[in-house]
Amino acid sequence: MSRPRSRIARCKEFVAFRSQVPKRRVNVGGKDWTFFQFGPSDVPPLICLHGTSGTAETFFCQVSTLGSKGYHIIAAQWPDYWDHAKWVAGFYKFLAALNIKKCHLLGVSLGGFMALHFAARYPDRVSSLILCNSFVDTTPFHQNPTWVTMLGYMPEFYLKKYILDSFPKGALPGPHADAVDFVVEQLESLNRNDLGSRLTLNCLPSSVTKHLNKIVKIPMTILDTVDDVVLPEQMRDRLYKAFPSAKLAYIKKGGDFPFLSAHMEVSMHIQVHLRGNKVFPGGVDAKTYAKKSGIDLKESEASVNNNKKKKKKQLTEEEKKELERQRKEEERKQAELKKKLEEERKRKEEEARRRAAERQKRQQAGNKILAGLGVTGDEDDEEEDDNNKKKANAEASDLFAEDPDTGEADPFA
Image (spheres, rainbow, N blue to C red):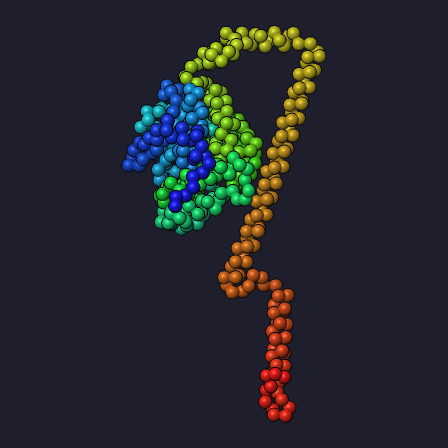
């Protein structure tokens, strides 16, 4: 009996995507990169890079939506690379095979980290970056070097279980649950080398912070979700501190896979980012796009500046006060939002510490059981055991008391 398909895999949008957009392959250095490509080829491309458990199919919403609007979207899936330098070299050859000299990058989780590695090595090949639930170093993922080496030899079922254990547990909202089911289904299509190499890239000690002087010059948008995600808050904070000038875009409810559960919001933020970097549908320039969209643009920047100066001169005292009031109100709202986000982060950190403590207690209890010491080692329990033994001995002595007449033990005394 075949495994039931997820709701997303059965939806008409995904079925139409697979029927209209072919899955392509290109051999790079003896390894096959698979990808979906949609949209006019004369538009600067946006390349989407998946995370540890993802595939090229997980970006089908962005490929379909943005590609049909006139953007050039490529969802790529990389083969097994066992260190970051080889991945960067492989991606460079992948772009060369597609004849792409410069591109925009969207990276999710591990895909975002690898995009930063590529940008640090080849900053002139990256037009802009969008990072979603990503990080700048792998410190929290570090494992024993021997364990990391063994990832290349571990069986496929163990590697899948290791990844699935990191997925969100418990009841999830409908879109989040559908996204998780779809990603789990995609995870089943990956082989042992795919899984082992991705976990190795996640766990090898690595950081891009020493190359920040190259990366900070690249336009960047950090796209994150406000609700609970698997990625530790400390890793998000490091990303924000590393790129303080990056634009921030928040999704209220997106979970770990917002490109599936909140795909319309993600696509909207991608469009805003691309337009901000002078990429418009169909490859037209800003004026042509504005004319088609019915937006009235001024003839030149000089005229815009002159109009601003005139408006400043014509402002009355009341208008100035109103503008000042609006500015203060906006600052107040921003401060409240920042405070709320900070409280939410602290709450998540406290929850993570609590879960870690509970996990440690359960592990210690399990170790004691395995060692034959019982679940707890309290003195009260030991004393209670001694009392029970004494009581049992007393009852046994009463049961086999000697008969005063015969001198033999009477079992029925």
